[in-house]
Length: 259
Image 1 (spheres, rainbow, N blue to C red):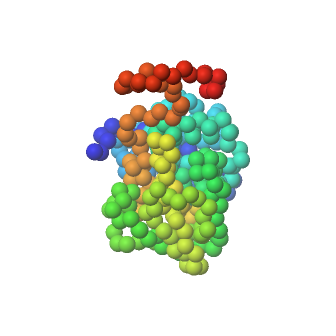
Image 2: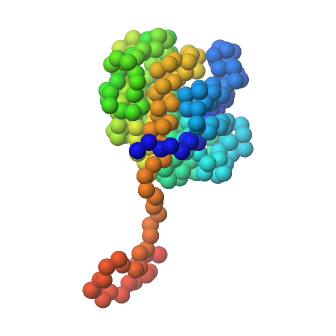
């Protein structure tokens, strides 16, 4: 059943490249976060969209903000090492509780993505302005709903290639082919705790990738897909001293074994 409640989204961005590089600033004059937030406002008019950046206190991701976020979009590249481990731990806890996370492009190397997946998440890469063809390998998936044909193309982008050091995705919906010959798992969904994580590869900062209609569609539908759903999540150990049914055994517990 579709969730009718307005989805609450926070778009997080380092906001480094836009300040330092004129080419990036020309494509995203107010920052990638502002562009994505505006795009989502148009595509998800009932949604509540906020932004956060690296330079803000707690990187804009205070406990209050995280508790009021259903889906967090993460864009990072130059400042992965500058992100507080404490903030990463708090984001991880929220994902396990059910908050959706969408990691875009270079966020494969972010602390939060690597921590949640448990691998290096490293890959091959080349920046040569080559064509990318994104093949839809799960046409029934809601994230790719409405895309015409079996694939869509980006005329110029940065290549990411296999081997991509990630666990086997729970859902694989997009595989990229690049002009130079490489292939890559570009659209992957993972489940951690109660939360869903969508990794979506396109989005290099010096190419106008987020202006593309199909890319925007995938991100917006990704937001709806990874939003919290289901029953309550219990992630901590719980000592249940009272049983639901009678237990016949007469057993004395040595509490020292559980301390």
